[in-house]
Image (cartoon, rainbow, N blue to C red; front, side, top):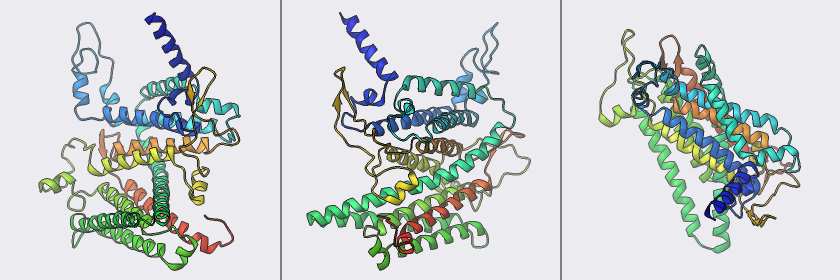
Length: 456
């Protein structure tokens, strides 16, 4: 009897894995929309690939694999058995490049398949919202194939793909942060006006002050540790320009004309954007190939140990995979990925940029299917609430961003088998911060330039 029940349960799970998203996650999200659950599952695929990449890049992983008898080339051997696996490929930056290459190809494939899907009645919508087991097999298959790619120029070429894709993804992250701050400010202001509770205004003021305090503290620390009185001109320019730009957008956001056109525009959004801009500035400076004294490592700052520029004939030391800016970047990436999956924005400008519709987030009430299982609501019969193709393209760019973040934006040198910082990474991050600030400034002044258009 128990075996029969187990088989029935297994069959139910198998039908869910091969079926639709509402069946797969309805036990956890019984009152969610089909569109939200689908995005969460695809985001889980991305996070799973990120976790695998993190494990592959952990310090000492290659040493541990070499201890497995008969596994790694040059490792512990078993008499009569030849070691086949090149552990230099399956761990370290090479593994991250291949894992993220597989995820990029996977999401780009679905981005191409889902072009111009208008509603869930489109046959391709069934592929988008179901067949999860087969999708997982496809991802595994592409990943396995990626590890057989010959070294050659693959890493160098894919590095530049990562740089371009990360540039676009940083802009998307900034747009999502703008949208999050806008929604946050609007909800709390409406709650304060409807309930006459001043605690909401106090909360907005507190978070605004916190964001500006952190941003100003960052600027001070940048000038202290990342500049020198007679050196580090580039860093001085980067810090000063972004400080001036942040002051400009903060002042513009509270101008009377702007407030009249956009009542929910305020310093909360500007403070969050300023803080994120300072993070991008810090991240760019840490990728400057010039190390000491313009680019001290965080370890040297904490332990008060001076670093010196290595000589040309010195042996390259171990690559520092993990640093503070990389960890912060992963945290921001996780937040933006989750927010992009469940967002329900009322900002028409952001919805147009992100190819989504208003009210496309969590909501709805579960329905009971013919099989008695509680299922989520198919809220896309009349029209999709987000662009399937753009969502996958966003995850495609996120895969490239993860690749660059985990490898600390180092450029692989195939001639010396070393990892080196590069100026393209610096300029990509700085230019993305400037373009992001420009986009935010445009969202503020656009209603004044085009008064006949609806920007609410």
